[in-house]
Image (cartoon, rainbow, N blue to C red):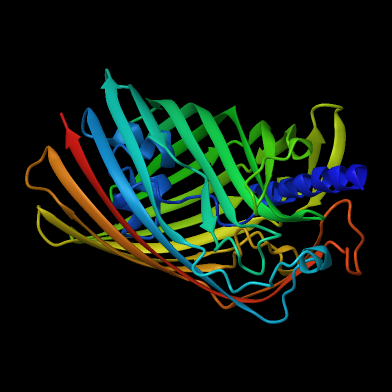
Length: 436
């Protein structure tokens, strides 16, 4: 009995890694929120706009079009609401046998997450410019009530990245600029879920981290005094995420030694390409457009490895598809001091319906944005942006078998999450820019 219990606990702890793969592979964790000045137009045309130092991330070639040395400091608050309604979900048979109750719908799995950014640029002579940016290109945070019906597939999912991006631009001619940069991106992950054991329910937590190097390129063309075109590319990033799994019984909080071990997984985050245009109409109006392609199908499967014996414990089939983002925005220059903005966007999800997970039940997103820029002087500017993001009703039908348990029967390890999500998000961002 003791040997069987130890095996089940160890295999149950490995089930946390299935959540890890789902979180890293889920849609919607590529963040657009890199500036408040771009949020007001739903990030339309950012590879061509070069409005401020945030172009370090959007398109480094844009640094050549800035009026002088500049610093930007910004923050965004992302408020996600994700509420689940069950339709026949179930917990493992073993959990029922040991006295666990099915549980509720999990409450609001979303919440408010702050995202900060910093950029600085400076010209070096007539042709060269340099810049540096710190931001968060990828992020995810969802957390359900720890007694909810889907807890065996996920409770908390917290993925954070910090990206450091020095860049350089070269002004080839008065109308053409090229730029390039390197990125070091740090990733940290923290995931929890419930497991079923003969000793009662337990909770397992996976933590891991790694850093990866990447690069970005950009070009910008002033086609005419009223029209600018920009193109930018950001490379994929290859991680070897190393971490550990820790498991404890819920009833006593006692750590379970057999449920603690080290893990690793090879994960690739996608590269992306953007093509943007900005067209002026007189002195008052700017129209901005953008099309962005994200190469999500680099995430097809993730192999989970136990570093103690280098054995593959699980293979996670994510089956992502590539995704597109289309956006359109307007700037209205009311006075020299005030500019008002608006934008819309369609943001396609890479998640296919049959592979949707509880860690981030994503779907296509529709953006509606407003913003404003206030310039009290030529040197100082304040930007504020707001966006409402609407998701269609999102269905989920996810079945998970806890490793080490039979599929059915009183000691079975199969859990199901069946139902639908009602999701929406509000984003509010603010930034200050100063040109020296």
